[in-house]
Amino acid sequence: MSEDQNKEKDFEEAFNNSYDRWFPFIEQAHLDFKYTIDDPWTAADKQYFKDQNREVLNFNIIRRIVNMISGYEIKNRLALKIGPAEGSDDKVASQLTGIVMPLMENHHGYEVLSDAFELGALTTGLNLVEIYLDRKGDIQFSRKPYNKFLLDPGFTKQDLSDCGHIIIHEEGMLVDDVKSILPGSESLIETYAKQTESQITLPFSAYQGKGREDKRCNYSAFWERDTKKVKILANRKTGDSFPWLGKKEDLDMILARYAMQLTSWDDYIDTVKLSHYVNGKFITKGPDPNKIDDYPFIGVFGYWYPEYDDQSLKLQGIVRSLRGPQREVSKRLSKILDIIDSQVSSGFMAEEKTLVNPDDIHASGQGKGIWLKEGALSGKKVERITAPDIPQGLFQLNRDLQTFINDIAGVNEALFGKDELNAQVSGYLTKLRQGAALIAQGGLFNKLRFSKQNFTFKLAKFIQKNYNKNKVARILNEQPVPQFYTEDLSRYDLVPQEGLLTETQQQMFYIELRQAKAEGAPITWTMIFENAPMQMKDKLLKMMKEEEQRQQQAQQEQLKEKQLLDQMRMAKIDADLGRGAERRAQEEENRAGAALSRIKTAKEIEEMGFDRVLKFIDRAIAFEGVNQKKAMTKR
Image (tube, rainbow, N blue to C red; front, top):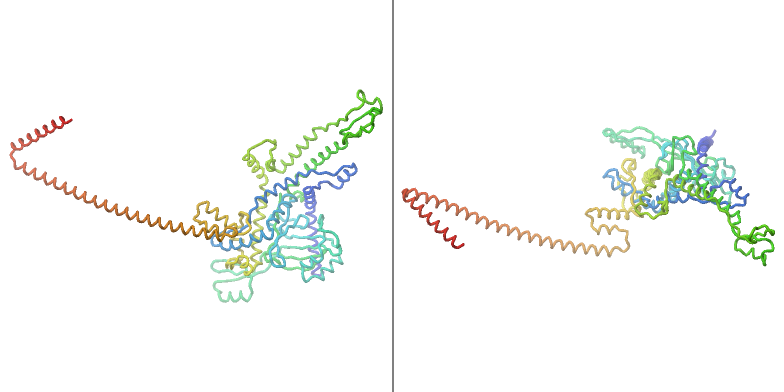
């Protein structure tokens, strides 16, 4: 058996095994999709309506719920950016963000993710988002719906890290389009497209457009996990190691020069490989064309229960549990309308020969005129036809079913701007009710956030591996830093983040500056407006700089005046201190003189006789008494 035949056999076994296991999911996902797009009836249901001359009607409540949750995600969409795990990686993270943001905006990355969330997580349960390179080498994004891929049925992880293979299958693809994907294999593609009838098909895989059947074929891309042998270069002292991806001659030269510091050995690392098939026939194979050693696909999951064994239930969207109530609502509303349409609801009944002009009975608007034999009516000869009442229980049951649909989906009328009782409530209370309802969707939004983080990691690796220095410099208007192309940079040094959605990195920087300014950071308005996404801002910046210069000059003048006042204040303080010192010196001198006088007096008293001292004291007391009397007389 040739190698090509072995490849075809391996592919066919993988396809059939995955198809058998995933068909229950694909079948249920197709029904979910039909209910969402307003086609819940089976072929038997439609034939039943046709046999009874009834119109096929559907009253779609599911789409309203899906649109509400999807609309909330779009309204609160956040930008994808890359942050540093450490401060030293800030520059490389900034440069990668500078590439990621215009890529997502210009190549409709956010729209692809939102579509995958709406049609995958909410509707069918799973969509894949693919990152790929176009012919110009630019990164692009696409969505793979439930009926265009098959996964390894044994995978259990949402990041697809344990998924053994992924098959992307396109039904009825134009042969020329396949040739453009696989240049160099045109003749082989043409041969297999004409001579073989494909046995590799997926159900419900309608292709866009009809006609040109002779120019169409089934194309399959078979992705498989694999390993490859590489040289590991390691530092003997630190133990740091990384795969050597350069030439063997260069590695030998490095090891010879630094034999004491470096060593190397053979090892295997994980990678993926890709092979292509037309109508189940092998065309070509090769290593990972994207150079990221991983699948270029990101799963956007709904409710995912990998431990459950029933494939029809282990993966589903929010629509799955709403199909039954939706069908019952449509059946009962259709029945009510049929009751109304099948009964005579207005007009007149009259006995023969009652009216002068028999044709008048038919001139009663949209009602119906009925002629009866004479004596058929008791009392009046002409009576109005009264429409029969429709059982009110049908209306109440229908309202209950619609309420059940909201309850099952975990939403309430507040999310649609209404109140359950049609009462007027405060905006704050409505906001609380909306927040409580959105908590029920937390699991879906958490899975979407995980998918976005995985998406950002793979996008960063795509940029590193496929954008050379010239292309990076062209996008950023600056050269990439040396760490930009470091191996395992995205795994250990970068953190995927979400921020305010803007069109460019400059707009995001402007908003972050405004927020920092509001929190009190020392940021000038000139710096903020230099980075503002404004037109014709040169004049504004010139005016602001002139105003800042005037303010600086005024501040300098104020500073000079303050310095002068401080000098004058210090001089006054020095003068006051000098006068105080003089006063203190005079007081010391006075105290010294008083002490000397007391010493002299004591000496004189000592030289007096005792009698003379007593006489001196008596005269002093008498003199003091005279002075007191004079003082009291004055009072």
